Image (cartoon, rainbow, N blue to C red; front, side, top):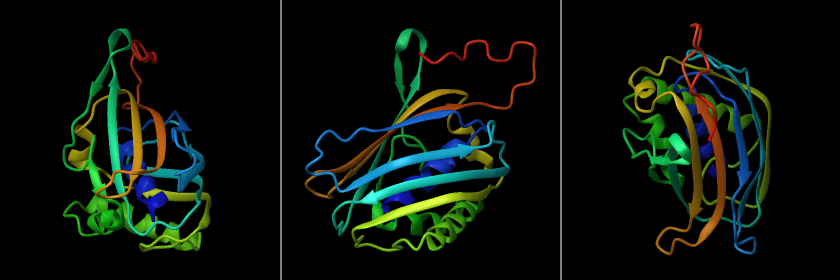
Length: 206
């Protein structure tokens, strides 16, 4: 459930405007306490248009049992001269904190049909990988190979964040103590499909 909670959020973020060139890395600093490890993420096509298909391959490992967990997202936009601009939590997008065990259910019960659609498809993806759907999460390996999510029209979500380059840090913690369980860093480029004369100007990653 942890890995798919991240994956659903990741899908919403990447779908916001339609391009998905990105880099990822494991940013866990204390390997002795790490319980969750993402080992690979790939996504295509580039660019992705919403609505449109998102093809995902995703692998992760749960290294030790996780009874409950908290998901913390820190999102920053790349600005001029290497600056980073904090993106606050707006409508569940941005630098938000969630209860990890109930994150998918909250999307399924959302009033936004786009969130419901992505959550339903992600749950089908979970079932296809024979992974755990509910907390507590046992030790297991999770492998999703070439799964397609049909991203719907996201409506107002697409205007929460703007065209540009972003770094998103996803941390998993033990609720109450904030003991780290895992960390994932994503460098994501978001933008509308570009067809004009000046496409690409000002979009260099800092």
